[in-house]
Image 1 (spheres, helix red, strand yellow):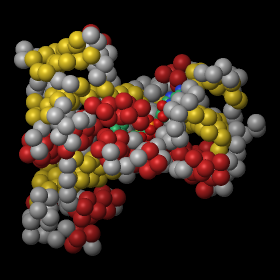
Image 2 (cartoon, helix red, strand yellow; image 1 turned 60 degrees about the vertical axis):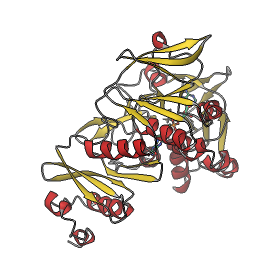
Image 3 (cartoon, rainbow, N blue to C red; image 1 turned 45 degrees about the vertical axis):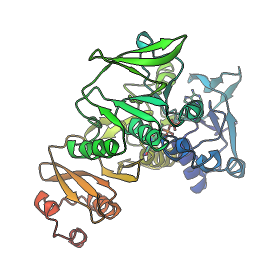
Image 4 (spheres, protein in one colour; image 1 turned 120 degrees about the vertical axis):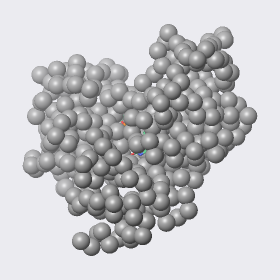
Length: 406
Ligand SMILES: Cc1cc2nc3c(=O)[nH]c(=O)nc-3n(C[C@H](O)[C@H](O)[C@H](O)COP(=O)(O)OP(=O)(O)OC[C@H]3O[C@@H](n4cnc5c(N)ncnc54)[C@H](O)[C@@H]3O)c2cc1C
């Protein structure tokens, strides 16, 4: 149909893009194609409250199913786009159908890295945490008294470890780098979460690589570490990062390099095609970058929608992120990439802490642990481009609110 937009991939970025288009009064026909069999849902609770069994699928859905009908969106679930034929202006689906488009939005997200097959990555009982299906498959294993090995001490691995410990499992976290969260946080934040996990009975093994998983009759039973030690495990959760889903774009001849390359208006190398969310690599801090967060999926999705309506868009994210582990809420404002120094500051609430990241005199980001008030102030400072001095931040007598008034 004339003017048709096809959105490929049904996640947070897709819904944000569609909702924004409709908010802008855009009435073009929209078809959303998702290979998953449920309408778009939020992924963050998968490694938090959903895994703990505290919320159900209905609470995960980004919009109720009828919202799509109400907003004139055709939802095609359980089918995959296999190929984009840009010359013909159509996409080929896994069920043999093809759909024509005038514009396309790629919101294909990302795929978790897996352990190599040669070290047992395909054994039964080895799980990744990306989709509802992944979590539904592992939830039965989260039973008291069982032992889980978590490979990778990043946010997703640590969240899964926290859930497992809360549910009474024996938990070991294996981290190859010399500290957990090394890729994403400063030593002070790693120290905070190491202590939190250890206090809750999780064994944290840093500077320790996995040599191989051991299986019996196709199911994982243990792990041999690079130290030569063998540990028995009932199952394994792998959290070793993600890869952007850019293969479909690449096969259609779009420019791709560790993500689908887009400009600040979310346009790919084909002006009829935009991309947003985990799959997109875009101009960021003077270079190119990807962000793997709800903030980016939502905001870049909206920016892509505006771009589709012809508006001049210059997407500059104000990054934020969060993680829940045990009774700690971590909130992050800004991006700490390239930081040189950090300052820590105790929070008002007992056990609260914030870590402030600087490059020279410039404040880049703040990690706030159980310190929502500091997170709010830090977000406002970063948005305003204001940098309190490290000495001010380090002064426990200074009321941070006074920094906002300046
Ligand atoms: C367990 C977990 C916990 C997280 N916790 C946090 C958190 O606390 N805070 C935070 O900010 N972020 C968190 N994130 C990250 C955040 O959820 C993602 O950044 C966000 O969901 C990305 O949204 P997206 O729309 O770009 O991609 P996705 O949500 O991955 O959606 C992409 C969809 O496209 C589908 N698809 C791909 N290719 C095709 C195709 N060819 N045809 C049809 N469909 C296709 C995929 O199956 C998927 O359904 C977490 C992620 C996970 C997995």
